[in-house]
Image 1 (cartoon, rainbow, N blue to C red):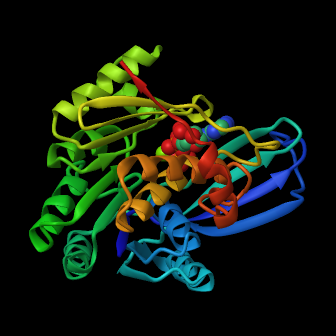
Image 2: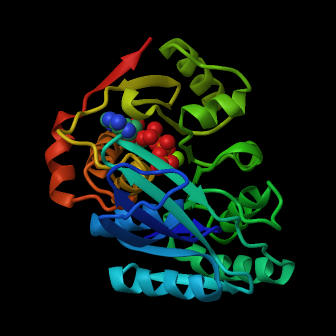
Length: 313
Ligand SMILES: Nc1ncnc2c1ncn2[C@@H]1O[C@H](COP(=O)(O)OP(=O)(O)OP(=O)(O)O)[C@@H](O)[C@H]1O
Ligand SMILES: [Mg+2]
């Protein structure tokens, strides 16, 4: 069983149009609304791979209710703590003509102290069932950057065998890695922010990955978008070339599909190499859908044998 934690759950609304006009009306050709926030994309990926998952987190207001309804409609098991402030709507505007995605996010809700205590209690009750717990995305307002660190230590107390996976950015990532998660998955920007410098060549990434391994993180995945993936495990660093698809529909949520498929395989007892290959196959499948994490199981199986892992010296 995998638990995904989404503290900043949202409705991800996607409008698909041809030729987005700023300062004027654009009529969308297609509208999609899904329960979002990175942890919910991860849960969706696991669910679509037929893995056992519970999505948890905090959600509030009318939007929080819709998030729960959308999850129920998808059949994704979920247990959320109710908060007073409404969950946010994140808007993605896909312009098919320019092949460009513009995203606008509402400010996140503010979480009160008693709501945080309720969520900690819920997670403490759920944790003993899980072999892996993922913590994904930004923190809502009202929480300290150490929130993920605090939750990981709390989960470990309730389930010492459980592996913690962290995929976040900025101060939350910096503070979170102090709790030594089993796995992290920064993208290029998040890794550069963590190290406070620009990383250009493969060697730069490999050095950063080695430092994180030395800090006690067992599996470090650095996703580089269309440039693929560099990852470190047991002191060694590897590179994975990206796979191409005939038409990229959206790149939003590729990282989440990667995390979802990796943890799905790890929870099923697969070795790290198999899990990473499967993760890249799922991230590639995510390119062919406009809904984040909405990968196709058959497509992932098709891509999987094409993924090649090369060691970096
Ligand atoms: N344009 C692309 N072409 C081929 N593969 C891609 C492309 N974009 C992403 N990928 C695949 O998806 C993986 C994860 O992508 P990316 O680095 O964009 O994650 P991310 O920035 O964390 O995304 P998100 O946070 O939106 O989920 C990459 O390592 C790569 O394998
Ligand atoms: Mg990401």
